[in-house]
Image (tube, rainbow, N blue to C red; front, side, top):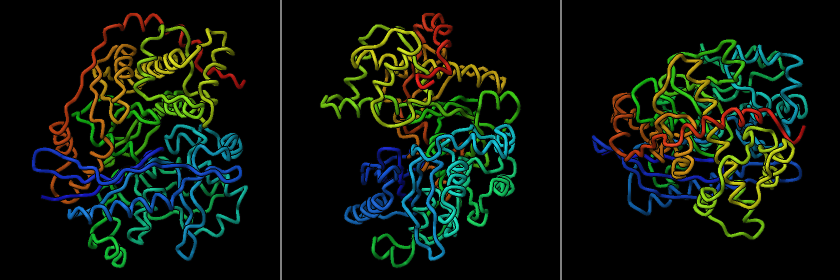
Amino acid sequence: MKQVLAFDFGASSGRAMLGRYDGEKLTMTEIHRFSNDTVSVGDTMYWDILRLWYEIKQAFYKLRQSGEKIDAVGIDTWGVDFALIGRDGEMLQSPVHYRDARTNGVPEKVFQTLSCHDIYLRTGIQTMRINTLYQLWYLAHEKPELLAAADKILMIPDLFAYFLTGVMRTERTNASTTNFLNPHTREWDAALLEKLGIPTRILPPLIDAGEIYGTVRPALAQELGIGEIPVVAVCTHDTGSAVAAAPADRDFAYISCGTWSLFGTELKKPLINEQTEKVQYTNEGGYGGTIRFLKNIMGLWLIQESRREWIRQGQDVSYADLEREALAAEPFRCWIDVDAPEFESAGDLPARVQAFCRATGQYVPEGRGEIMRCIYQSIAMKYRLNYDKLCRLTGIRYPQINMLGGGIKDTLLCRMTANATGATVLAGPAEATVMGNIAVQMMTLGELADLQDARRAVAASVKLQTYTPDEAQAWEEQLPLYSRYLGKSALR
């Protein structure tokens, strides 16, 4: 029986999971889990990438101690962020975090050269200041000496694959988050970068999910005790891996629910037109050349950062406590637009929720329970709006929504999503990203035949939880009120 090691990095933690396929089910065993802590120096927020590489090596050491052998390894992470590699093969600096303030106002500067409309038609990607395109424009115009010293740009999972193999490639599902990949040809849009003064010589060759970067370098393989095994390019964007594990056949809607919520469906080809541009739906890559047609929504970040702030204030509060307090609070008293700019950055998020409500003339929530109720119901109602948009854009009314990822452990959000959308919610798997990572490796090794076979194996491996709407009418009546606060901000 083949065994693989799957590394899954999220915005706040990472883990290494040993994956197996017995011919019917996928199983996983945790080898190593660790935090992913950002580091700020001066005014810049960085990923502590060398610490994460240390944790990768620790996972291999633990694997060796366990006596388990593996046949391959795959890595998935978040999108948009990158490292620059110098001509000597060394990393020039730690990667900067996408939430860093350096791209504030950058899209507007870019649009002086190329319009938002032109960029969307070329790439089909939602305009967000965090996108790689705007990060590179900043470097090209504010730190040109850094780009001049760079030989290649590597997205974060490709960086770790480079550390393992010495091979520099960019896997396409993560490349699609950059905002400069052509979704039709699935190649870099070099002309777009050239128009914006960004050097194209730094772009590495592309590789598809399911292909192999290379094998672990001999000296490193000996150090880690793993052999010169292949490093598989899984769907290296974590949402790509999660969608690959969606236990569905076709014409399904999904919410990949984590720090971000990705609401969408899987298409065979890009969907880019005036309507999709107006609502800013994005066309990211999926396994087998599919398109993840989706909308990026601020997700559990609002809950996570609120909890961090209360802990900083000395309040020992768990996620279970917050869910319980939210459930006890009176519903529908106030709303926020979860995608308002004031909710993007770290800090005192509960105070910003109160400021939003105050600035929009609403009831101002007091205490943890009321603030959390406002956040929960606002996320669920944002799902509702995007559900309606997705159905309208694709011409399909999806009777069921697959909720994937760690967010499904939050049963209150799952129930609210069913009520807000009026659709049945099928929650699971919670470990969708890791299961998708493992499944792609198993397809590469020939253990699973294709994506359909992989999804069948996922469905056989987990128990899915069904949530049916039971208060849909009450939520429907709140929709006009909620809609008043969309596009509002306490910063304006």
